[in-house]
Image (cartoon, rainbow, N blue to C red; front, side, top):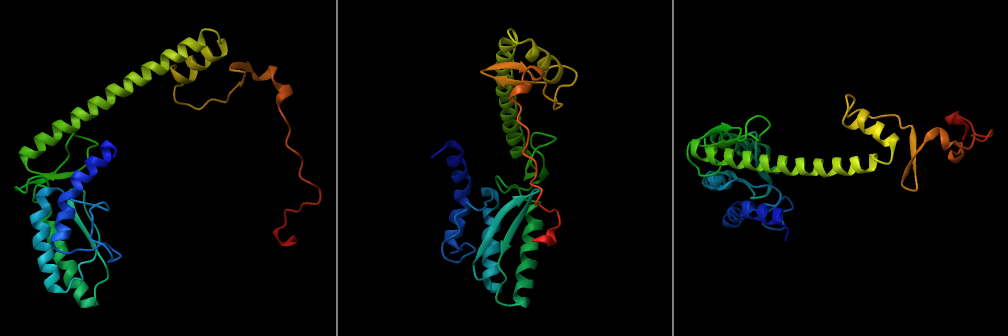
Length: 226
């Protein structure tokens, strides 16, 4: 199992245990909801226990399409229900749980509020002050590590480019203009082709260019001619 798969399973386990405890099945109704389709943090599990108890009392068939956090709030998706009246009651109770989730730390269950660990660009999560500090430090450390790794990759690529450009003046011009120069990021119109690992000016390679075959004269552009 890959590291990210282990991490996902570890995070999904509390939700899977909740589903087993309440005999909640997946959308097909055939197997117990595993959490692989979506899960929430351990701080929200007591809230899910109260929600499941109330929904079952209202007539819920215990079938769950997906549960997950979004924009800091709980999302709990169920099927159509046995009747419209019952479905209205189920959805109203789910809305109450959604409102409760915005006041409950997803990590520990303490009072919390929607936050953005890592600052701008981070995922919105409802956390208490203590859990926010921990998650914010984790996100910033992970981001710094990703930036360091990206800088190392960029340095390796530039070293390779510089080595290749030593013997290819055309490639040197390309790098200075479109990769590291003022027009960096723009897509150039290439004036060279690669032949045998060398950059050959396009004007010296015209003999290799093949013309497209003309459209047969019998072909018609009128879609009604077929």
